[in-house]
Length: 220
Image (cartoon, rainbow, N blue to C red; front, side, top):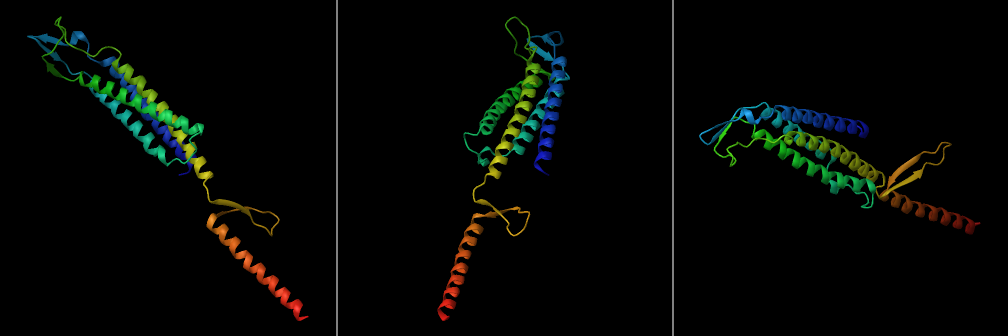
């Protein structure tokens, strides 16, 4: 798979996973347990099962897949040999840090919201006798962080790909020579060892030719 097709595949996959996780998170926000659905009896809170449980867990799972796809495809930051002053590398570092921050916070919000929407009993409650419930906006915040993680992750992948491409093009030890003897000369890429060998092998031949020429003139 060439570089351009790989970029399209990775970015498309990350966007699709992130978009699906965002939709699931917003759906969990609409279906989470309300205060009137929780029963309080003899100091115990009875929580009903809510569709937000499955929706929240699904959103968290796809958010995890999104982060894994981006980081596995992007590879190790240390492997990029570009200059530290390279603007693309600076963008990649900032995007990587930001993506992990948004991923961690979004993932925890989705898991916390999903856990409180499962069917369970709890003997803890507020002093006023009301049971704890998921506040409005928890899943919505997780959805926004999920979308941000996917967007920033794609920026990181594009930036680190640019750094690696520049590093491979400017790899030391590669010389460009032109093939002579034809009307249309084409560049030939040779390594440093081949360049040194060709220079070493040229001088003995030229000296041998000059010696033969000198001997011939002396015999005359």
